[in-house]
Image 1 (cartoon, rainbow, N blue to C red):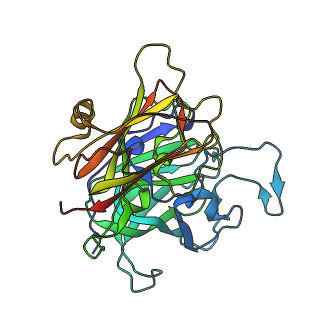
Image 2 (cartoon, helix red, strand yellow):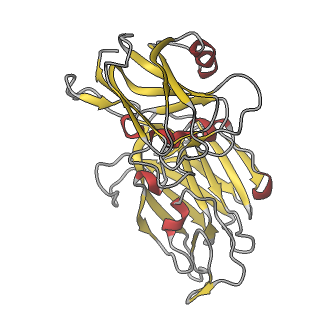
Amino acid sequence: MSIHSQHEFTVVHAATVELPDYARRYVNLADTDFGAKIVHCSDEWFAPAERMLQSASPVFLVGKFDDHGKWMDGWETQRRRNGGHDYAVIQLGLPGVIKGIDIDTSHFTGNFPPAAVLEACYSDGIPDEDTQWTTLIPAVSISGNAHHFFAIDDVRVWTHIRLNIYPDGGVARLRVYGEVHIDWNNKDKSALYEVSALQQGGRVLAYNDAHFGVPFRLIMPGRGINMGDGWETRRRREPGNDWCIVKLGHAAVIERIEVDTAHFKGNYPDSVSIQAALVNQGADQSIVTQAMFWGTLLPEQKTKMDAQHFFDREYIRPLGPVNHVRLNIFPDGGVSRLRIWGRLISE
């Protein structure tokens, strides 16, 4: 039997969207950048379901048509004439605890689904007819050209979701905000891990500004593909410096650090430093305050444009085990990637 989790439901017109807290604090587990993919779809006559998982905001191209009709930036099914409803099964890029959902119907006006249901499951393989699905969002009304935000209160780990639309129509984007889950129990404690990495459970916890960039991309795999693939702040016109706090996937003794300014040329930081601490309790906001007084893990270092900067134990101060780091950039600018490697310790 499905278990309906408690949730808050908000509809926001696409032109006036303001993201809820969970959409700013957590990563989109259903993003193709993380490996999310469609594993089954009932129909995608007008537009493929994969478009629904793209990280870029949906667009509307006037006058663009293809062999099936008007080109739409999202998933769109044909008009049903035989009853039933459409659905898409998505494998999350990384297993995780879901904190919130955004069903986005931007640019779908006369062709959006009137209602939707969202289910989730944990499966080691592709879900089949024997899979037990849990309802995270029971039947709700859907509007056209709008974001539909749902806060999810459920601590279970999921690998797949199923979006059901009634009876048919189009969805521009489906975003599944959550926290990556990593099972560290069987990990080799003597190995060196990139404990800041998103795929290792790292999470961008807070930042003071992100006018141009997306902070969570700091801990993405690979190097940035362009200047938009990283964290960039506005030009600072007052004293001080900008900062970003990353919660590591596991407490570790840090042995290696990389700060990558790929593609940032006229806007890279003049210098960077890193503070760190072992934090056992405290809400995100209290950690922001605590971070001002953390010890220095990496003293201030000059940076160069469009370059990888590596720091080993010669530069890293021996703070012992840490599970949070604060990257300081002076005074402002852009950083493509931050990588923190360490050896695991018991938490």
